[in-house]
Length: 396
Image 1 (cartoon, rainbow, N blue to C red):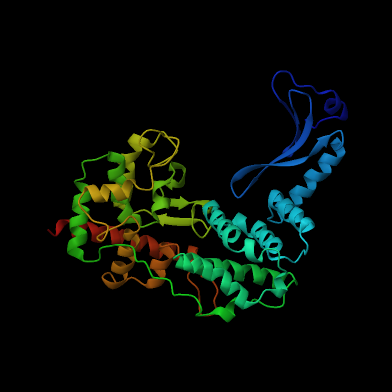
Image 2 (image 1 turned 135 degrees about the horizontal axis):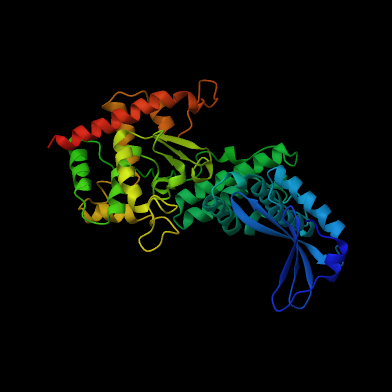
């Protein structure tokens, strides 16, 4: 029930803080000293957050409700109210509202809800550490390509070549946002094309020789460690999803009757839901595993608790214990294995493979193809791939 003015005025805490809810996430927090604070609870990008809306009686019940509606409008526009407040506060204290840091934080508040939290943290960290101290207070239109180059070369000089490249990319995105919001004329980053050291391409260790793959699969089936780890090893080559997507798989995502694994958008790198058709072999592994872990949330729970998924290093360490070196196979290498062998050995159309790898596939006009139109062909491909892996295990 909504609060009344009388309840707000007379409400008192005892020995513990008291929360009085008004609905829609708005509540009055009454501390043990009876100080009263308005708060708004909300979710953004899958995270629970709290926004301070003022102190009672300076902020009345009507005022708090009005501020709640303002925050909900921001949420409806895809903007985090907390981050929006930070950007506004900074802009008011900054000498120039067109400062690079002001616009960068505004851009971050607008974009971060579409990213994984780990990616957001990395972007913020790079900008706060290497760009804001040198260019943060500068008006965006006045920043030159040469000044940007000086900033990112500081990153290069400490040996972080890839970080320098990515930081420059973030700067370019901020400049393009400033152009789109009429606070800059152009993005100077393209003027620096070729100015940074090229990043070294790192390829994940994998196997593509059929005989070697057969030996690996037989070793996995003979694994004497944890049964849960063994099942993860068996599924890794069959479904070839990213290691993080595999280890954090949840039973609610898997429908064994439909032979489907539907991974939610927030768990995917590109923040789009992803369908993994399950082969008969994959279903057999999952049915057996369900008798062990089916009562919990995670398909592959951690060793000592069901409240979180297995460690990111579990599969990798198991491969090492079986005698496979880091130069032979990695957890991510199962994706490269499938990509190469489906194309070169089984002659599967590359666009089917790329869709199953959760890569964006575009038509000649740059538009993303609809993944749902590929489901039938992907089902056939996944069963063909599983059957092929079974043959490799038998060819000793």
